Amino acid sequence: MSALISVQLDAVEELAADLATLAVALASEAPLCTSTANSLASALGGHEGLLAFSAGSGWPRLIDSLADRTAAVSATLSNAVDAYRTLDAGLARRIPGRVGVTAIAR
Amino acid sequence: MSAPLPAVAGWDLPLLRGAVGTLDVVTGRLTAWRSRTEAVGRALESARCWSGPAASEAARAVVDLSADAVSSSAGLRGALAELTRMVGAAEEAQEAAAAALATAAAEGLPVDERGGVTVPVVDPRMSAEQVAVLRGQTEAAARVEALAGRAAASAVVVAEAAEAAGRALHPVADQGPPLDLLAPFDGAGEAVPLGGPPTAVAGWWASLSAGEQRRLLATRPDQLGGLDGVPAWARDRANRLVLDAALAAPGTPGEETARAVAAELDRQEAAGRRVQLWTLDLDDGLAAVAVGDLDTADAVAVLVPGIWTTPEDDLAAQVGNAADVAQRAEAAAPGLAVAALAWIGYRTPQGPLSIGSRRDARAGGPALDDALAGLAAARSALAVPEPRTTVVAHSYGTVVAGEAAAAPGQLAADAVVLLGSPGGAESAAALEAPEVYDAASPLDPVSWVGWFGPDPWAAPFGATELPTDPDTLHSQYFDPDRPTLDAIAHVVVGRGHA
Image (cartoon, rainbow over all chains, first blue to last red; front, side, top):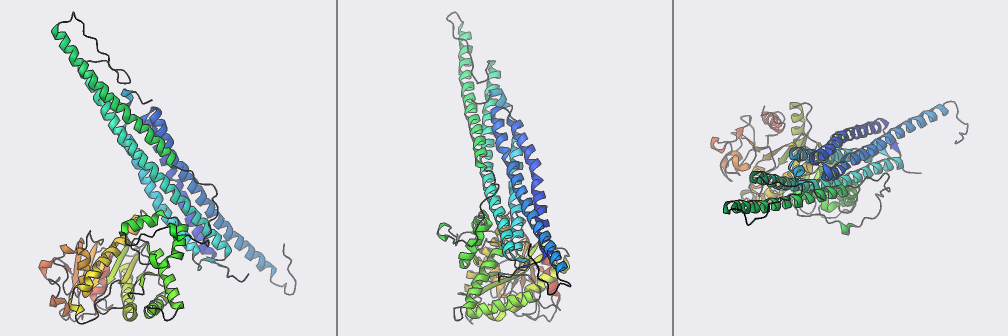
């Protein structure tokens, strides 16, 4: 493979942290939306209140789902950074004093 | 079946309105959240941060996230529209139900849950007086039943709207198919709103997912680079593609402009500055370069130059002025992010006849007006706070600023600074900005010729004077060693003037 592969681990880690913060910020909206859905039900009561509650419940569902996906992407980035570091440390351990010894891929 | 009449009359409408208002606010915050998430995606795409196949996949994951956020926002807005309709119907239903109950109570009529009223029939043995009372009650009963019918009809709309709101919300897919950013893009399906008002353009752009935005940038950079209302990061990306294409094909029109722009971008980036190529029009020889990030800055300065200014000869000096303004402004307000745009966005007068004419200003004014509106709209469409915006116009640029203010709609600026102005507006109020400042020097003849209107330094004009040195020349207002630059910087960050 001739393509350039480069990574600034600290920078990617920072972006992962940014995404994690965004996930938490979004998830924190869900409880407010849940209580708001309850308010819709209380305000109308009966059949109409039930339908309004059902619609209002869509807000926390969507927001939780988006927050979960954001957290998952953040975790993927963090894992990638960890994997790069682990790989690099492993390579570093193999290289000193082993010149001339053929490494075996595992 | 609709709700009983007393139940409708007892609906808690303030609670209902408050709940829908809360969902509206949360939906707005989701738009702002999405723009922050997309900024992370753009940072991931940056080759300086991470490159290679894994980086591409990671950026793609964030793009997918953006697509979900766009889809979710659209669903929430649709549901919100239905809930708003529901609130309106609930108000009508309650008003009618309350009136029905009040009418029945006033007439002493028993009314059932559905608004039905029973009135005794007229008996031939009744006196004329009793018959008259009964007839009155019968008429009242008809009114009650009509009101109850209205209440029931509106209550049905309440239920329908609530149900429609629920249908408008689609769940986010757990794992959508990966988006192929390199796939051919059928641009025929997506019309770029060329010539549309900046607010409409900004709304259109915000409605696109990050993947759609990237594919449009890749296929139509020439249309997007100068489109007011599109965020600065996207204009920068589009204009750089156009620039690269021009540099790769020597002999194309505007080659000299392209080379000057590329050299200036290289020079600024080599100096460690973040710059955005906000405008590049090689046909008309126009360019605008921002120092800083126009999408996120707390304060933005837009520098409007005067006569004989071209990108080929003057972009470096203009961007240098912008950098100086941004640097002094950030020093005046530590912690505040400032961006300054060197805007050669109109054809400046080049000949002896045109320098004494408003003709070029009449073309440049609306362009400046749209540019300012676009900067504001790009933020508001993403629910991002707008920056404090200051127009810093020099010489004939002050005439352009006057024409921008005269264009339809309010000038999207918090302050206007006039430097060495030959006139241009009838008064400070005519410039449509809450704050208007002027700098004029005794040794600057342009500032007292009054070619284009009253002298802004004269008290009746109504501008606040900025300091100058007694020997400041017409081209020296941005001189780092003179007091005017710091005064401009203070205005840009909203701290009065030094």
